[in-house]
Amino acid sequence: MITVTAAALDVWVAAFLYPFLRILALVVSAPLFSHASVPLSLRVGLAIAVTAVVAPTLPAVEFVSPFSATGAVLAIAQVAIGVAIGFVMQVVFATVTLAGDLIGLQMGLSFAGFIDPQRADETPIVGGFLSLALMLVFLGINGHLALVKALVDSFDALPVTVAAWRTLDFARIVASGATMFATGLSLALPVVGALLLVNFTLGMLTRTAPQLNLFAVGFPVTLFAGLLMLLVTMPYAMPALQAALERGLATLRH
Image 1 (cartoon, rainbow, N blue to C red):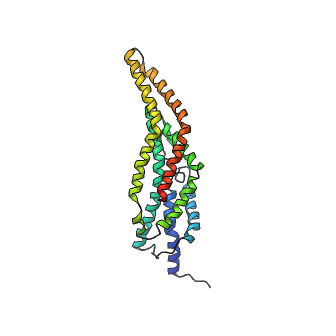
Image 2: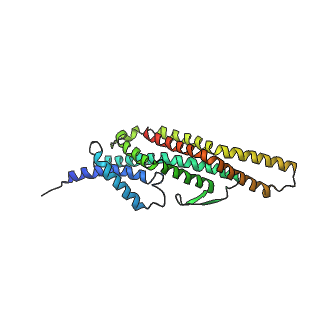
Image 3: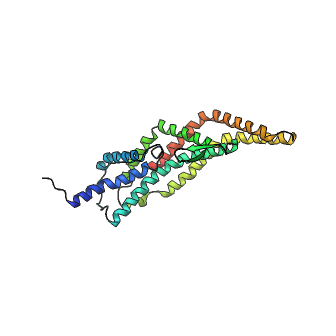
C-alpha cells in the first residue's frame, strides 16, 4: 500500500506551485496571452500545462514550505519575476501605440477612436492599427514561442529561491522603456515630419489667402497626406517593428 506523508506532499506542492506562479504571472501580463479575448480558464490551463512540462526538469533547490512566511515571500518573488518578463514585451507594444498616437494627433484623428478589446477602453485608431500590425509581426517571428522559451530559461538564471529575485536587473528593464520610447518616436517621425510640412504649407496658404476656410480644406489635406505617408512607410516600418520585438526578447535573455 502506497502511503503519502504530509512532508512529501508539501515537497510536491512546492515543486509545482512556485513555477506555476511565475508562469501564470507571465501568461496574465504578456502580450497575446493577456488579450481580453483569451478566457481566464484558458490562461490558467495553459499555465498548468507548461508547468507540468517544465517543473520536472528544473534543478533541485532548497525546500521552502508554501505554508510558511518564507514560502509567501518566495511566491511573491515568482509573481514579480513573471510580471517583469511580461512587462518588457508590453513596453514594446506600448511603444507602437505611442507612435500611432503621435501620428493620429498630427493627422487630426485624435478625436477618432474605437474600443480596444484588449484594454476594454477607447484607443486612437492609428495606434490600434499599428498595434494589430505589431501583433501579426509578433506571431510571424514566433515571438510567443520565444517568450515561453525566455520564461523557461529564466529558471536557470533566476532559480526558485528567495535570494534569486534580487539578481533581477530592474535597471535594465527601466532602461528598455527609454529605448522603446525612442523607437516609437523614430517610427512616427517620417509621418509626423511630412504632416508638419503640410501644416506649414497650409499656414502659409492661410496667410496669403485669409478668406480660405482652413477647417474645410486643412483637415482633408492632412488626413489624405497622413494616410498616404502610412501607406508609403508601412513596408519600411515592418522591419523596424521586428527589430523592436527582437530587442525586447534580447532584454529578456540578458
